[in-house]
Image (tube, rainbow over all chains, first blue to last red; front, side, top):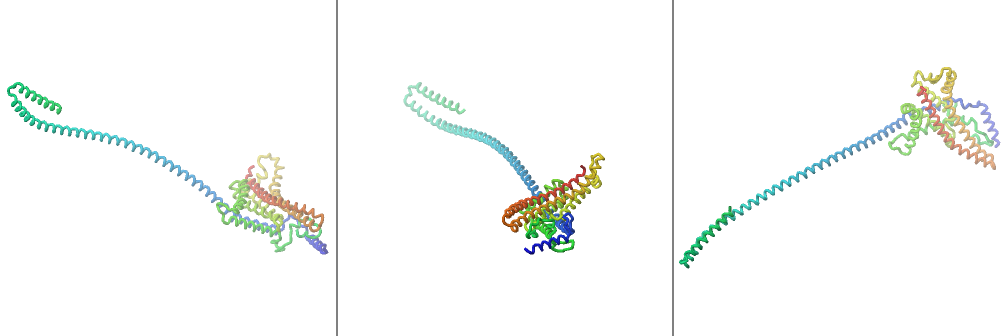
Length: 193
Length: 260
């Protein structure tokens, strides 16, 4: 504690020796160190920090711009694809309709052809059958005629043998037989025609 | 502050801002505590911004976001807002330098063990004010080569007898008061803030350890005041950095738009 006054005196005399400083008048070292600090920081910001920052901002802007453009492009592409798809769909529909129409027409044509062919076949078969029947009838007639001859002779001999007296009767019988035969023959000829 | 540890109570004096010389005594490169704090502030700025801008990514991380926020604050809210994109970009290095230099040196005033702002000695505020002064006069002369001084001193659209009054006022306000107020506003805010903090804490020291007893209670009060004023000083530090940069920008803007 005894040293306190001595210390105080020392401080006071020191203060008295140096004129009281004016805080508004700068010392040279003050100005110089201020200038050093300022120049260092200015240079640092000018050549290091701000260019880096500007580069970053430019890159970020470009990236955002690029992203927007990419999105727009994708959207345009999607719209184009949709249009194309719709066009293709419409085209396919038209094509399908055309094919259906064609098929219907083809079907109709085929049906008509088939019917005509069937009719032709039927006609042909009928004609064939008719011809066959005619031929068979002809054969039958021929055979019958021969048989009728012999039958007639048998009959005649029978008739002659039994009753030669009844002349008129036998003649009538033969006549009727022959007329019947004639009639049946002409009837068959009529149906054939 | 250490000088007040002796028995009696001594309020802080202006000698606070002229601490003992550490190196290069007698040369123009004298180093003392406050000069070292300035150099430290410079180192801190360089380290922070070097790390923050070394590998910048398009999608920023936490640290890069903070650095970007700081740079964008000056770029968008001060430079581009007042000067427009083109001129804002031209003066951006100067404005960014002023802002971060003043901010960092101001904040040193509340950092423990530094405890004094680098801007609380007249050299720094004065130098920056002179630079701002040169910048806005340069901006005006470059933009309006022949007419800047004339239209500043003789605002057009005023009847000529009024110039007798207006011109001296303009001379004083533009060419003298602007730089002087710039320098003094910053300097005095920092000086006053520092003195206030020293007063609070040295009083606390005195009440707790020298006065003793009942006086200790008062020490609690001064400590609380010191704490509150420390918070306040953080606000003042940021505010003064902003004000200094903003006014520099406004002066440049006025010089560029000197048509009136």
